[in-house]
Image (cartoon, rainbow, N blue to C red):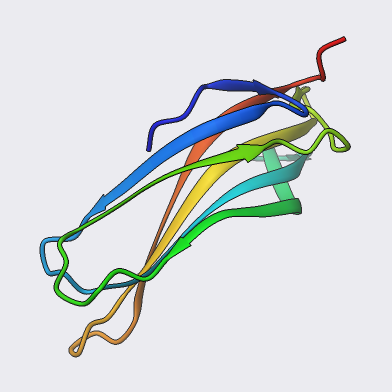
Length: 131
C-alpha cells in the first residue's frame, strides 16, 4: 500500500495498493478509509494499573473493491479519494483518540480451510482543513 502519511480534511489523496497471493485464490479485495474513536480507562487493582481500550468505528468510506480472476497471483489498483471535509481530524490524548487508517481486507477461497480473511491497517494522520 502506498499513500501519503498525512492528508487534510477535504483534500484529495491518491492510493496505490497491491496484493501478491502465490496460490491465486483471492476472492475479493476491499480498500477503505476508516475513522475510529478510541477511549482508554485506567483501572487500579492490588496487582497494578491496567489500561483498557474501547474502539468505536464512526466512519467507513469504501475506496475500492476488486474481485480478481481465479488463478491470478497479483491484484493491483490505483485510486483517488477525497477525505470528507465534514468529519473529525486525528486527535491524540492520554485517554481519548481519533484515529484514521487505510484498511485493506482480502478474502480467499480455500477448499481445505474454508474462507479466510486478511485484514491490514495502515495508520493515516488526518489534519484539519486548510484555511
